[in-house]
Image 1 (cartoon, rainbow, N blue to C red):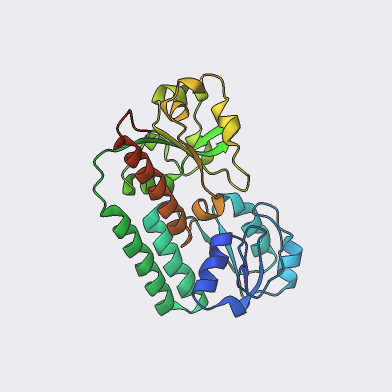
Image 2 (cartoon, rainbow, N blue to C red):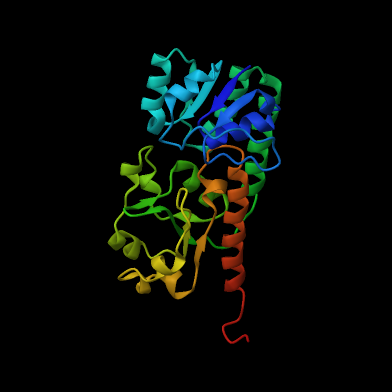
Length: 260
């Protein structure tokens, strides 16, 4: 089978299912560490559709409404396109199964999805004594809070998502204002800017943010967006980092105030 992956998580899933030999090209954000390199055919929202069609793929895999126009252009060029739109942890598992069925790796996909869900359940088994209030930032301008699967990870790691009511599918539904962040007064701020390095000093120095407990307690953290904002198996790596940050915050609560 000849496959083109226009989303990073699709490339990751294909590799984990043993189908990397079938992948012809990938997007710029796909991790190819430890794999035979494949040509990069474009970014997430900028793809040369003529170049994709020239590869004569049997299947092109895209993600979300952001790539809807790319998918439409490829279909008009005669390509078969699978577009997934997973936004929750359960939907990530289902997307793994869907890709597996589409590329003929059904059993492997069922195994991978089951392992994904089992590892999530293991995270959920923790019984924290306290639940920190967490503000997750996906983008700095405008401020965009976490998509649904990120909010779910906060809860599974024993935290409270301060903007849980903003878990819309579109980024416009998740916009927040600096005043709302200040009013929420989170214990922890975790940022993962999509495809961009997080500037912790810039977050700390925002007008009014000095009032926030997380800023006062130096609880601003960054997580690589590759580990958190690609809705596929790698989310588990981001989840473990989430839990590490929240557990470290709890450990600080146990230190006596006059300790050296």
